[in-house]
Image (cartoon, rainbow, N blue to C red; front, top):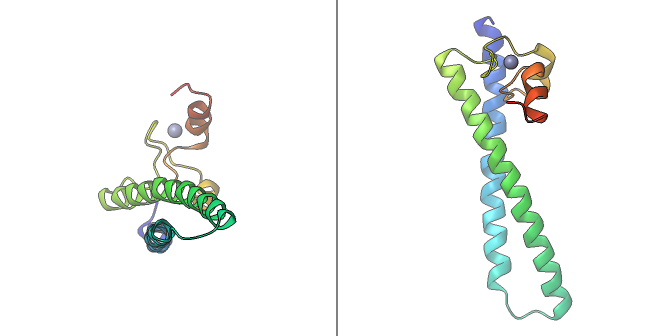
Amino acid sequence: MIAKEVDSYIRRLQNKERELVRAIAKYETDGRESKDSETQDFMDRANHTYTKETLFQKSDSDRATLGLVQAALERADDGSFGLCIECGRLVERKRLDAVPWARHCINCQKLQDEGQL
Ligand SMILES: [Zn+2]
């Protein structure tokens, strides 16, 4: 892949990284705030529990995505960005356009989804 193309993926990855870091920080603040307010009626508490669980799930998946985004930026640093970490072939362009932090080519992703990797 030529450097200019990698650069545009890097920019997208950096934007995504910032966005995720901000979102995760916000979940943590929101989580703390709902823990602090103990003097609500039952419905409010039920609501808060629900919100907190949703926040936890969202922050978990954001954290996982952040890890992938940062790993992709590291691969950009060492020059292996866009290569499948399993077979070393180029990850399909369409796939990278949709998910710039994809680690696997379509083939290997399929194998992994099937539990064969
Ligand atoms: Zn592969």
